Image (cartoon, rainbow, N blue to C red):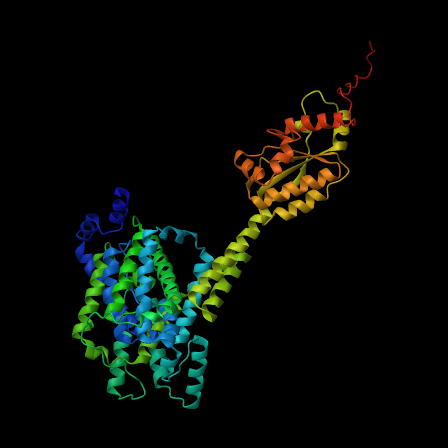
Length: 571
């Protein structure tokens, strides 16, 4: 009971968090204001792209951003709607509607809480860099393609982003109008070019304001605005979908929870890497994201995650505590309550330009190139994950990437396993002559097994061992076997039995204590122990092999006499 309480207490905010927020409040307040300016167009854009509207994006940024900052495991993480989550939500909106998306978010939040209690956050460290890079590249492609309809000023529907993009191009070709396209391209160009030259300037909000002013001044009717926003957050609501539909929503909820955990923990890890002395608690981060995703749907928000881009802006702006993320959420709340009419005039094409620029920034060419050039396996995993993200969905993409990475890693480990014939002269006790050694070598062969003896490599050993002939004793040096599973033990047993069937005895040396149980479980150890063919060292194994040959009448019972030096008389 005491241990359980201590575990729960470790997941909750502490006095240390409050003390850290009081260290440099001015710096954190300025950082939070900067992040809010960057986050406003992103929250609006991701809300529109998800299909629930700009108000859903703002509600998510405020509610989820506040709770994740208070209860999360990172001092620098900024949470809210993200492009990766939007990719998952689009088909859910198309299939289940708004109520379905809100219920999926609620269920996903409960699942994240369960993951936090089970301490699942630490397993993020096992995700390979090639999967992360491919995942990020695929998300960037999907986000960019999702903006094509709004960037071209046309309407297109569908669950798959490639289908929607194609329909948007067809609609634009049928009635081309370059107004929306020019706005989107202009906003994206200002963000990319200006951000490269002056990275601290919030060009996203500057470009969006400029585009909105241009549309209003020149009466560009083809530039569709966001539309009316409610003044403030909606009242909490608990009516989502019919409870009978919960079963069909479990699979999408698992996908949302998996993505929220993956992206949030990845973003927190990026924040740690950008600072000195900061280290996030992955389980507490899952708790914060779980609470955020339970609360956000109650106010009409979409599922949220830690946002890598906004977190990076937060760190670069000098944030040192959770106060910065809380300030970001508070500023956005003020905008929701005080500036909704102004925000409603922002053209959708301008937000499309913001998200296109964001997608371009997500692609780290240097990092992609380094990962692709590292090994052929890394390049394959990166490409598979990116393609699966584009063609399927993000959860399937991560599963495929992890499966491919695991299979290729097993293949690489299996290739490290070796079966080499070795010279055993240096293991002979002193006093053996060259003639005696030659006689022993005629009947005995020594092999050394290096590396793992497991399912991915074991059958190759069986093939090589089974081909041994023209000897009477095979000595296996096993001190360098790093690991062994049941398959490896069975293969070894089969090899011993096949060699015994041809009259060849097998003697083993150097079996590690941890491997005795595996060999014994399949009967291989008894097969060797029964004839006394298991020994601690190679010299002991050679001595046993000699005894076996003596009993078979192949060697004399006494050592051969040493040759006499030339020129000396025999007594």
